[in-house]
Length: 183
Image (cartoon, one colour):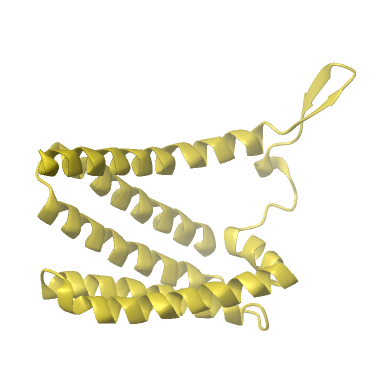
């Protein structure tokens, strides 16, 4: 009975995570396209982002934010988080089921550390946008591989679908960011 309860809880957690990954971008896109100004009960829709003249790529937007004090603070905190995550991954590596999973987890943690170091460096210097986009894509690839490997080991059949779907969505996000930076 206990195993079934854990299994159902895992299915619910993965389903909520997959739903969040699917729904959050659509909410963001909907709010970005449907920003409206209400004047005297008349609603007017602003220009779509494609029609605006200052359509910035994702890392250009991040660069503008990183120049603020809040951006610098968050970049430093993300760097500390990534360094601690890397230490935890190395320490936790002895407990993983196999060496391939450890290599995938270590690769993802190392690339996350490199990405956050690049973002922290962008607070004081100009960084080519292809560098963080490539690091994010590599991170997404390693993290997706680890997630798929972990889900396939833990679950068989349908319970693994939300975790594998989340990994595929993460890989898709990395691909979209890389394509955006290469334009």
